[in-house]
Image 1 (cartoon, rainbow, N blue to C red):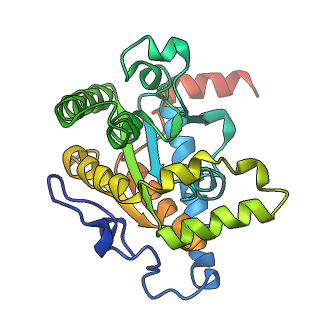
Image 2: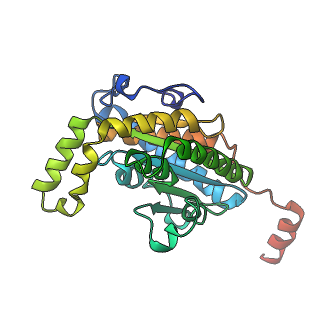
Amino acid sequence: MPNNDFRCEPGKKVHLSELDPNDTNAHHERDDIEPNMARLRERLEALQNMLYAEKKRSVLFVIQGMDCSGKDGVVKHALGSLHPQGFQATSFRTPTEEEASHDFLWRAHKATPAKGMIGAFIRSYYEDVLITRVHRSIDDSEAKQRFKHIKHFEKLLESSGVKIVKIFLHISPDFQLAKLRNRLKDPTKRWKFDKNDLVERESWDEYQAAYQDVIKQCSSESAPWYIVPANHRWYRDWAVLQIAVSALESMELTYPESDKEFDDKLLATLQ
């Protein structure tokens, strides 16, 4: 499946209830896509190497989704082949006292990837128009103002050479419930369970509406949102990997040109 099948057109209303989180595009199991996964990982590694060598641009993956959608898993499994020297993941939780004393974009701006680097935001500045809106700590008027700030912020990053790739991991409420139950039963996953997850679950419909507005308002030609069906982890990882490779390929990365005359002289001294 080309990554355009996951892409959201700028300004177009998205109805998440009409998108099947179980969709695997006719693939029935992991074995169907495993050979392609290996090729995609190799290609991503090669593209990262060129990006790191070029040191003129960077890439930022913004990964959002409901609790249990697999945001950490995407970083581990879909982006896990990236060399750690050129990759950094940042998780955004409740703002610290210092972060809360600044504008809502401050903590995100200082964590954006430097030239040559790939960064992943596990949750992001979009939480400030999601959870804040669902819990009514900001009203619709303030949300619209924040949308404007976010779009200006992303334009600023783009003008500085940052390629922004925004991914929403789409799951069903039944899938989330099964994952929450599994966390309670499995001692190795019990630490992941937070009773607040159950509180947030009660606002499922409100979160879906907030995400739909975010996707409509903040999907642009240069930084669109991608909606990835995520009930099947193997398909989720394959889809994200495809999107990642396509995004880096669109940058037309190359290795820095060498000075042949200088290199020839240097090689002569090494004989």
